[in-house]
Image (cartoon, rainbow, N blue to C red):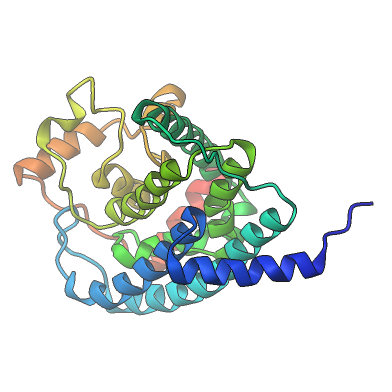
Length: 284
């Protein structure tokens, strides 16, 4: 029976802390970036009162609860993901390709990660909308039907482990270059905050162009929070298009939002949102 070397594990813990302090290791830098960005957003989110996608915005009760849940998630998910990374290191599962990487190699590695994570996220996201997983894991994230930056972090720590745990699993399965990891980390953080921002920054033609319509926008994920059983993709719309889970009126609504002619969809009260989510999960 395999038994981990606890003394070796302790050395890896100390090395991890050292790497965090010096930003020498890309995987630990990703974890640190996640925590630091989360804390920064917690401070800045109070300034984001208006909504461009849903002008009515969020209620103070929602903001207060999401701030509390985000703080709890940051603490516990940092421990869980950090512990997972330390364990993988102590078992020798995480290694990086130390050879110099060309841009095309880094591009291929990043594309592999991008597609695999999007697939992982889509199917587990759909699973988390089924009972009992929805109530036990995912319901907390749907507390708000009008997402804001704090919604990114207002997640059950188990859900953070499911989504964030893909990164160390990917690194363990593929010996990628360290430079590639420095692309993966910021992509995760930036995409997470952007799709929950409540603002739509992409141009009006985004969903009409063959080259760009495959990548999600803030409006795409915003409508997932509004309607629950549509738009499950994490990075792309590919799986939603293939599986018929992209909201049929999404593109038309996107055009209206960009043209500033849409009337905001009424935001359900928080309690009503939870009830609606439960009903939709039960009927799906």
